[in-house]
Length: 385
Ligand SMILES: Cc1ncc(COP(=O)(O)O)c(C=O)c1O
Picture (cartoon, rainbow, N blue to C red):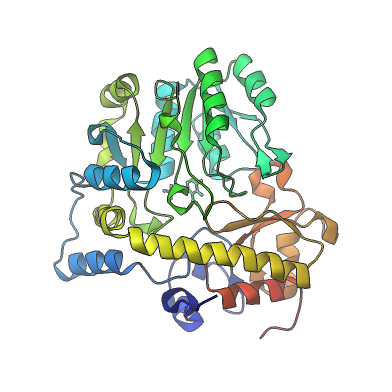
């Protein structure tokens, strides 16, 4: 592959000076490949917008008026989604948005469906709000993993009021097909369930994969809400800006009248500045990023086959998280703990992702090919370079 300056040349010394949790949580001899943030420099357009704001002392309260137009332009271009900019509600981050919607569409004690293994804060937000987790685990499938519609229908029929969908899915990287989302919309309509579709990883659908916003499939707009953000794809999760999008009058009316008004005041000004720059002017950089991640996911397959052939790996269809089945390695329920111990490399343990995470670990490949190579070397217990 042609080397790509910005993405290939990440500098470990500079990375170790970062103060974010990814770099702060472990000792200096550990290579962090766990939490979902990337090692690349910022997209120039985002960096310049933020630098301009800092230079101008523009660090006041968020002005979110331009965000809706910027996102609508991006969504039309990338997803073919003609959303109404008036139907967008800024929130501080995706999980704040999820919580706000969950509290609107469910009551304490209600069951909320999740497709395990899944992003661990999904359990926390359901439990913290006094709701109950109803797990409908993903099924093994040709593409790696698939929604289990029997399990979903069983949970809906049993009284679940909401489905917290992770689309694309973390940790598997699955991009749901149009037909799957349409089937889910049909069930949601039949049982009166609201689908809260967390689409934070959507801009990073890779190569052949096409992300379909949930509310665009037939029958979904009356029963779904999209939660989106620039934070993962342009690596600005610390700046705090995300948004909810409705696809129908009914849902827009609900958000307009019942979403707590205070939520908008928690949005980060720098996050909005970064998001607007990203959605409006950061599409070229995003294409370069996804091309690089596409190459990384393929390279990872080769590196694992060479050095850790016991690991089973289905490349992600979106994003930079690789969900690794390490059960054949015989490292016990928490292989990430063994990788940390023997190789000083920090992956995410599979355990907090739900029962299906036993014996699995999640590797972050949002880094240079060289650092990913180093991570696999360390996982295999080879001497550190
Ligand atoms: C699926 C998913 N949702 C939400 C988040 C967190 O988003 P935020 O920081 O905007 O709450 C992440 C972060 O990795 C994620 O993977």
